[in-house]
Length: 448
Ligand code: NDP
Image (cartoon, rainbow, N blue to C red):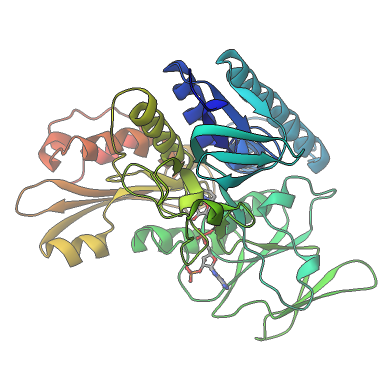
């Protein structure tokens, strides 16, 4: 008989926490999870899932334009933000319910309240109930950073953007990372005027330079304004409810909404980790070892709260590896090599492995193969936009070091290409593969 109430108590029912709970339970552990907001976490409730649906919704604008080039006559089209928003949020409710069912079907007890750590084996729920567990897993994710400046209370983050009462006619976005470039694409496509304010001239810093330059060029051609080398100094609410944004450079910008997308911070405030002897890192993250174990042997942490790679599939892998290691008799680490990622900008971009700059710095002699092409679907349209594919290859071994794509469906194509890097394939393997014609992906096997 265990002396604890549970074998595992998970704090946070997001991607990492739910996966860990389910797998630990399937290994026979008695599991409980506490979630103070909604089951599903950032990805399901206010991240990847609703964002991707907004991207799909916004892309119809371009599709409708293209349709005319293919002989379709379409009556006057109009867009209703409220409808799209409500459809998306209804689907979020549906997926949240599915996540709840998964926990129930694995006999994971769910507490819909905040939990804090009170010791190495104990947590306290908001209701005052204290429970004990042999292991505690912290999977509380992250939270958008909102700096403090005059008028910051008038600004929103990605948390609020899914619930806007109206589509902003003018949207100003601070930051030029994932969230900024994705929402810039969505609202630009929907007809809003978008201004991106960025502290440097680099967008999407960790992606391949050639690929992001292409995105920047296309985004500007599509009408997105970029104010580089500045940050928002103040936001003033006007009598008509609109906002006046001062970037300290040039005239103030008029806006209906101001979105801050300047990174996310681990959700550790007030979690009580000090009660278990755990010291937080510089960004408030929970330091963990390769097995996601903290400085306290009985407490583990996975996902964004550890501030390593802030991506859902990584959190899921960490949660799964933790549960297998601790409850499944299969101690294993997560590999962080060749993690593919994508930005659902318009057009989207995706990459895996080393960028050209990093590959040159590490390997010295690298071969860079590129293909620029006009997506066939756009052939009848006026848009001169071209896709760009890059493959970075180690000259000595012919091994592929990185693949970077921008163009329609780039994330779908990249996911498959990422297998090549994981398998350690050479460029020759791509050369030996027969092209599938006509497709965009065939460019990858035709690089010479
Ligand atoms: P990012 O780290 O992607 O981008 C942050 C942006 O804000 C950068 O342009 C950065 O500039 C700028 N910035 C940072 N601090 C400041 C500051 N103090 N003042 C002005 N500008 C600043 O963060 P996001 O918020 O866009 O997204 C958070 C994380 O969520 C991402 O890192 C990603 O891991 C995840 N995410 C993943 C998605 C996907 O997989 N498609 C989609 C959305 C989010 P600089 O480059 O100079 O540092």
